[in-house]
Length: 241
Image 1 (spheres, rainbow, N blue to C red):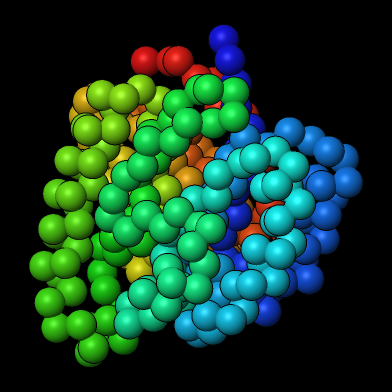
Image 2 (cartoon, rainbow, N blue to C red; image 1 turned 90 degrees about the vertical axis):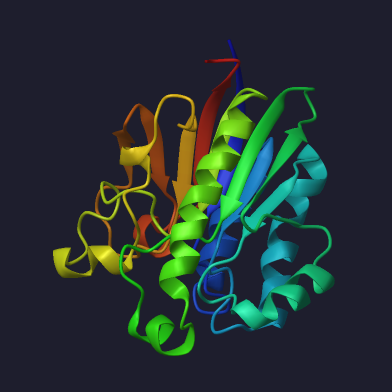
């Protein structure tokens, strides 16, 4: 069995948690540990601050260059909808996945299929309800789209689902139960065997205490930096069914 090592993190909210992030990444870089793939699971910056992503990428630069690791990102709620194009334009070194998937060939010739999205909330926030009149329809269509993407990805082999919002409530435990519906949606519980990813990665739940769970046979990782106080390194077996 072959394994890949994924460095994943969400909710850096640069510059808010930038020093914590840089310290965490520096430990990995100084140890020269192999990283095959880097994933940023949204809320990379705070309040749409496009320029604040540059120091995040600078910190990751040594790892990405040394390991030739692809860099995949999804948008969070802090990467504002109307700023998406600016993020894509300013940071072309990042593969941005926005309700899409990408088949990635890693340095060791192993292939991985990654589905990326902001994700879905069971209940839109008050801001979303006020400013996005069709938000319920957007979420319904996104659920359908994610299921289609996951089915397509599964045909290519090992599949990773990356969302900002949690795709289950299992890894938001520790947050107040009354706000679960604003943190994610129980997508994984609804998937059939042809749709389930091999692992799922998300952020958004800063105060969660359960940061890893197995849901419907899927290993789920909450990689929110404020919850873990560190970046997350995941070992994933390649070639499993």
